Image 1: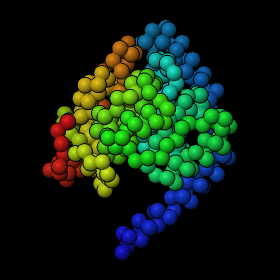
Image 2 (image 1 turned 90 degrees about the vertical axis):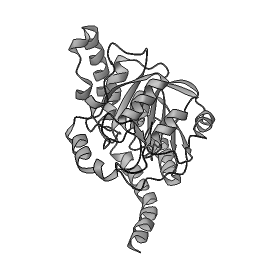
Image 3 (image 1 turned 180 degrees about the vertical axis):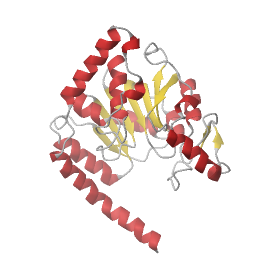
Image 4 (image 1 turned 30 degrees about the horizontal axis):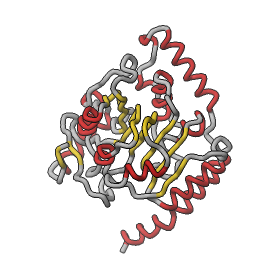
Length: 294
């Protein structure tokens, strides 16, 4: 009964919280476009003097709309590898107030194609962008749908985007490996995706494919960084780094930006204290579950 009541409360409170975030967002708005653009120019000036002058990717992170420091890392990446069309696709974007694409859309004029399965989140996201002075004229396309490997290409194409895009963001809490594997109608230059960092860096494992998968455990969902690296290589991408906690990974299309962003190994990205602690404390509990070799 206690669990049932908690689930009911969660469902009832979500629309209220979404509305509160919208109202707060109109007053306490993250708008530092000018300083970010100056920072982009500074990166380019340093690059012109030689790549040895540039900071390490790990030192460039900051958070504006992303959950962690991915906004800063993406700004750094696209300072050195300029976008070709400023189109970004994000699958599982929530209400848009906290996702990978929003900073680029609001502060840098990118064209967004966002997807989420939650009706209230999408409604809140549409309202959020409609009220923002930088996006009200032409807000990002926000689609409410449950994404599967079977429908992902149709959903993306129906939203109005195909071919080259600059960024694909995946944070599906479960089927990330299978969705990226299925995507073929867009060709992103950069992919950022969540991985499962309780799994050792040398094991290419994922949860089995299940179209209606809903995460019931933080420890049994998604795919290991090694699995995503293997898939990335099959699709023509290399791992260029992760954020400081090791589970949000950045991949770049082969032939793009190699001089600034060489390939790194999965193991080298999982030496942080959080990833190390998770492997030591929690991997043993779930290692015997139904993981599938990627």
